[in-house]
Length: 231
Image (cartoon, rainbow, N blue to C red):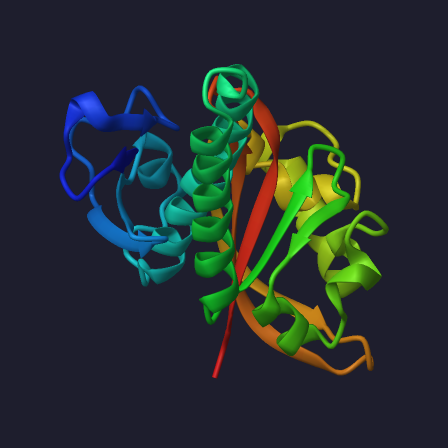
């Protein structure tokens, strides 16, 4: 949930990504950001899918970053629609709100020490943050709108995961982008080890958490993968 101001004030609630949260969440976090002189408060907690995924015994850092980033992405979509609706009433106020939302999103995503890659529903990369550029050797304009995350993955690992998922679901899962989002599109965050392949073909191990990205109306608009390099 995202609130305008420095308190969890229901009257200031602007975004609620998951209207039916877990009644007894395993994780609850509150973060506050100052942007353009305004304070924004983000409250996020683990949902039922977090328990189902069986990853709550591991480090929670990827979950926390994922949750905050999902709220920010959904929030930007909200502010775009809000801006369009209020532009005639107050152009300056609406544009300022949109700038603040975009600035918050960019500040968090680009300052994170995690690779953050966001795709649309079909898998085409739509966001590639600065940490992803540093880790993988690609510039954002080389991949955004052009390729899927398959370009940075080992085909053999993808095929093996496809086989595991086929056995898990009892139905064939083809190697490809669907392997990365099979759990996420069912509402379950998928955190697991993978190998990433850089532009120069060298490789390194990461822990990757994949979650679904939904808009303010809870409609699926894409997926997000947040990766932390294993030391």
